[in-house]
Image (cartoon, rainbow, N blue to C red; front, side, top):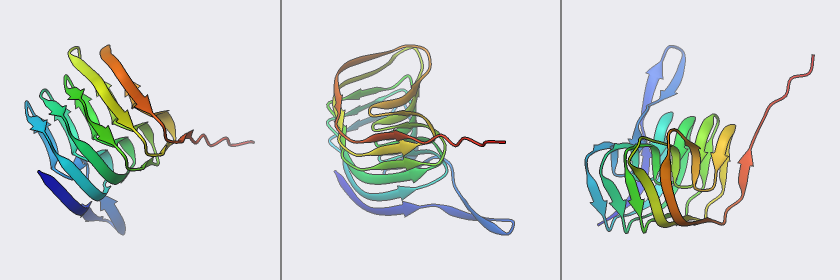
Length: 165
């Protein structure tokens, strides 16, 4: 299956515009879902939990899938998934750039946690930029996950703001 396009979920908040949480090209959230042979293209913009395939996954797997999506958000932002809990990513990759104003920003997953999580035979080629906890594969890991045969070739940039008084 192939999905192409742009996704931007916006809410009007007070006097300004607020972006939504849990935004992905395929789905906002995926619970105990197996995603296989998926290709996504375009741009995804949200606030927190933003990914090229899903904003948030719990359980399930992403296998043989690719994301050529520019992903833009604030916190927990990833080329494939913004936040993954007890999930597996196998033989998948992201080629889009990932940009966030906050932390937990990764080429594949922004924040990965749980006790049965893993990434194998996967890679990221896009540039990754965020404020803190920025990585070519995963921005931040809670608990322990298995990582095997992964690569990242993009530019990784963590921006820190220092205020002098």
